[in-house]
Structures are given as C-alpha cells and as structure tokens.
Length: 66
Image (cartoon, rainbow, N blue to C red; front, side):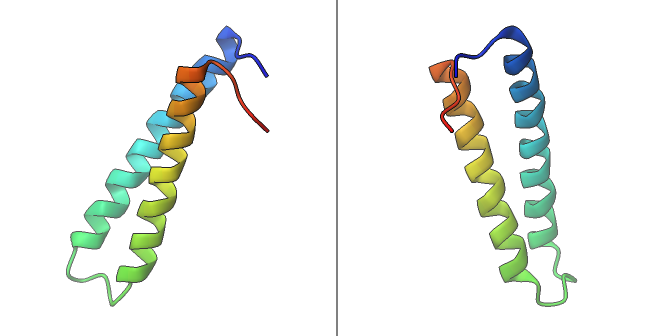
C-alpha cells in the first residue's frame, strides 16, 4: 500500500512512541532494583527495536507491506 500524507504522519508519531518506549525500557533495564526482570526488559527493548526498524523501513520505502 502506498503511503499518503496521513499515513506518514501516523508512522512518524508511532516511530516517536517506539523510540520513547525503547528508551524507557533501557532505563528500567539499567535500574538495579528491577527485581530480576532483566529478561523481561530485554524482550521489550528487542520488540521496540523491531518496531522502529519496521516503521523506518516503511517510511523509507514509502509503502506498507501487509
């Protein structure tokens, strides 16, 4: 699907959210009081990174593949 202006704006908004989510999870991972939730934070960081890559690829390619 070809991206229109509204699609691009939405993806840019979601990209910002994904980056904020990744930063939050990275800060929680470095917090020593995370009660042994390291694996949980690592998975969330991985998922945020994948979201970022997918959104950036969609923006660069100017399309979304379903």
